[in-house]
Every structure is written in structure tokens, then in C-alpha cells.
Image (tube, rainbow, N blue to C red; front, side, top):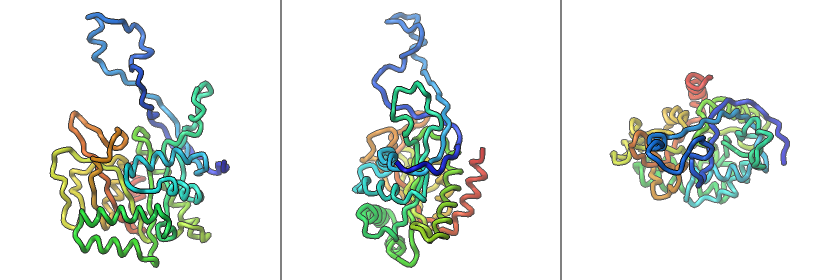
Length: 307
């Protein structure tokens, strides 16, 4: 296991709970077998918040399963070699971080808690990794949906950018469990930009990128018209981001479009949600952001996410 050269406190949030088949009434005092006296109490929803401190660590081999699980949450059933993509992210661990729980309780009965990955951030230079199966699959996925959602000239423009070896494109990946608060994104993105600058200065892989491409988990109200605007841009007032901070990247994107993943979603994390009894339809939103826009995006992140 690689040494953890980086250890930074990130903040607090609610620890995501695993799905259990057992009743949520477990551990509640005074629960009877039946009776009218208990009917009101049984109708009340029981919510328990667990406050957790998070830390950022250098990505290591032990993070493989956690990173792959989060990538699966993003790509769902798309034909992407997630094992290879995970390996590439780990191999270039001078770029990126994983989020772990800061202090795992000593009485924890789960040995996996200490290494559980709650999120990660990384940048993969698609131009440098040209020819890798997972990279070609990601490019194919993006271009295929762009051709379906956007005018022909936009699809041609994106194809040209993705295949221009003189202006590298980096895939920006920022994934986390849904209960991890957005405030955690600010130090992660700040650290990532510092690492990218250092990689460029020292001539390490994934240094210079002219564009960033992001695939974000988004959703819309089911039943609304989900058409795109001219130029391929989705109607912004209909679109909501799972990772709230990614809306700032969306504002600076020069190419942006979204596609439905309704048929691929089979879990809550994948996007089958509802808010205030309004059903939501899951999408993926692709954004191409010029590298020069990262500075104003970071300013927005500092303005809205500073604790």
C-alpha cells in the first residue's frame, strides 16, 4: 500500500448508510408488537444523523474497490473498462485525492471502515492516454451522445477537440457519496489545481491541459420537456446537479449537452430520486470547459463553499 503523503482535514457531513433489510425501528425503546397506542408513533419517520469528519489522502492501491464503485455510480451500464480506468487513476497518484473518514471508532466492527472511500477527485489526460481502451471508450461514449443531442457542427467540433494532440484534453472526475456535503469540493479542487501546476512544472504526466471535460450526474423533473437548446445546451432552469458545485463548471462550458440514463439506473445513487413527491429523471451532463476558465470557477467555489 502506498504511503499517505497527503492528509488534510476537509470538514464534516452525514455518513452514508448502507442499505439494510432490518427494520429502522431497531434500537428504539418501547416498540411493541401491536396496538392503537403505538399507531401514531409508527407513522413518524425516524431519522438519525451521524456527524463524520473527513480527510483527503493520496490515492493508493487499497482505494481500488472504492474508486471503482464510485465510477460505476457515474457510468452505470456504459461500455467502459472501469478496472483499467481505476488502475490509471491509481498509477498517477501524484494527481488527485480520496476522501476517507478522519477517525474511525475503535469499536468499529467493520475492518473496511478504515479504508472506506467516500469520494475522490482526479484528472486523466485523455490525449496522453490515447489508445488505452477505457479512454477510447469514454471518447466514443461522449461523441455518440453528442451526435444524438447536438447539431452536426457541434459534434464535429467536439470530435476535432478530442483528437487534437496539440491541445490536450483532461477528464475531470469528482465523485462522492450523495450524503457527503458540497463544501468538501473546495479544498479538493484547490489541491487538485496545485497538483496539476506542480505536474506541469516538473514535466510529470497530466500536466498541461487546454480543455477539461466533465460528465456530471444531473436530473430533471419527470414529465417536463427535456429537449436541448440550440447549440446543444440543456435548459438550465430544468437541470439540477447531484454535485451542486458542478453548476459553476456548467456556466463556463463552451460545449454542453445532457442525455438520459433512465434505462440504466437501478439504484438511488444512480439517480432514481424524488423531491417533495416530485419524481426525478436521471441524466448525465457532458461539459467541455476551457482551462482558462478554471480560475473564475475556483473564485465561485471559494465564494459559495467557504465554511
